[in-house]
Image (cartoon, rainbow, N blue to C red; front, side, top):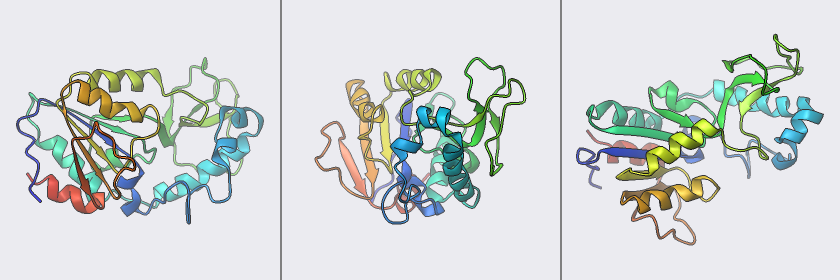
Length: 241
């Protein structure tokens, strides 16, 4: 397997998903050993549930925070951070992640858009409140409340019935519209809005590469190349500087 040559690209965009964090000990959301277990996330991790039964949302948050706090960045996270650090000032880079674990930042990545928020961050449930989102590793047994307006606090993540934050969506669209290299790593990219990213990159004329454990079924014609295997094993080989 020949390493990728990044020197000829001006604007690089990377999309990552759950497959990047599996080697850090973070389970997938569904299936055997999955985070959700017997719970129906689309019934619990919703704005409606947050309003009516916030304790259930925080129960899920506590479980996920516990797992994230016990994890460390793996070679896939480290390879992406090293890639960004190796680029010239004339090259731009944006890492868009569907993960909420914050491991890319902990590995040293700088330009990161967390599409779905971060589980170890908390904000007020009232959008009009002046309290700013803050880093938070507390494992609450009861629903915490805002110090400004006394409303229930919430994990700063995007719930199933919520939209991607406007600033994250805009930063992503702006990067994709003129990128010349797009990589999707550890994700099938089939869930909206990520499902549209490779098409946008292809439309911009970018080289598009799929890196994941399993092939897409059916194949996505907008991906020009694919490398199959574990992200933590493939990326150090492909990103050899």
